[in-house]
Length: 264
Image (cartoon, rainbow, N blue to C red; front, side):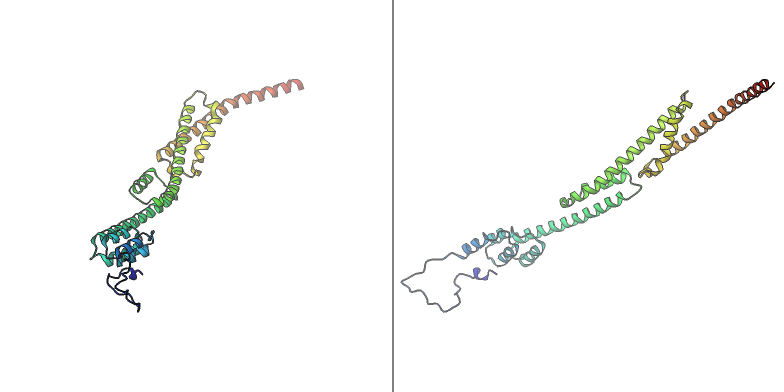
């Protein structure tokens, strides 16, 4: 591409132009170095042109300056393979950038794997805080800033699920505490409506999206307390029926006697 600029001084140009006369010396033109330096200033990030320049220039400092424009793997490979035995500085720079590119690609692959893990956790019915903590530790040592936004979006879903789990556990704990307080109070019978409301809430926990996350001991406590309260309620009802039956019978007898007296 730039062969015409890299001819050695003294090479005769093609063509049959007349030699300048001895008494009319030609004005000195730019030296090859000056020509190449001018071309170097025009590269402006053109990797293809920069790679061609490096492979044809005989000036090591200009080659090194041109190497600053080479970053893509294909051009790095091309320059490195062609110059590794002739220009150690440029070869070292190319090799370092190739290593950095390979390392970054490996980081991107690790980041994509972590994002996929996060997506799977978001669909896992048995999501646990420990799983999310492990994911966070894995992501903390990954350097792939271009995928941070994607990871953050999926990670936010996990945060919402963990918050929902905590809220559900708190509701169950509070309901159990209130039920225990009501069951031990002297006015338990008067609080039947509230007790039934709390029991209904506990029985409906199984339909909550995060119910699987509830600790087993909470579920066992809820079942045991519900059974105890139901038994207590049934006992009160039987006692009420036992007390009410004689009174109802007496009231019925009195009513019959009054009817007979009026008839007599």
